[in-house]
Length: 210
Picture 1 (cartoon, helix red, strand yellow):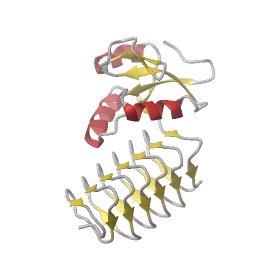
Picture 2: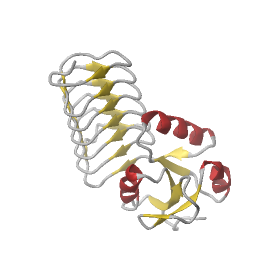
Picture 3: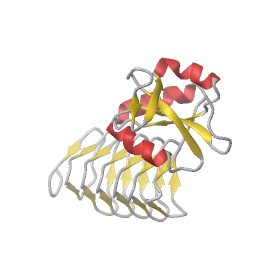
Picture 4: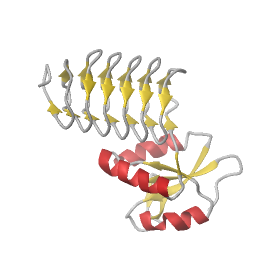
């Protein structure tokens, strides 16, 4: 299995709804040639016209074919972290994908394996951790620090200087005011407005969020 002469072969792990969106970004990226999905579906199953080429246990043999780049296209934070760390241990590079319809400050910093969806905005000095998802139309303002394995859902608004810990999930349409810090493994409900810090492992829902 090889990519085109000018593009690097890329595999996506996962073949669900999130993976469909990631795949459409990948095929627009001139750096990569998307050669297939890794998933539990039978080999040859087509997802958006792209085949499933194996499951997790096939990763070593796929490495032997010359594939070196992987994107973990799984929405669940903990599972994405576990699968990504396993792929890294096998030597695969975690590839970052950015929709051409996203707006990224030149001073923003993106960790390996992150994905930035269409309509997302990352402003000056924003930092995005490894294997983090900035989903459709989410806005991350200046100096925000987003940890590893985080999912910022569609339509979220993070004002300036927000800090979010590892594996946290910010539900669709949530807003976080300037300077707020969320710990690790925090869940913010859809539509919430977070106006104060949230400790690790807590849930925050409502307007204002409690």
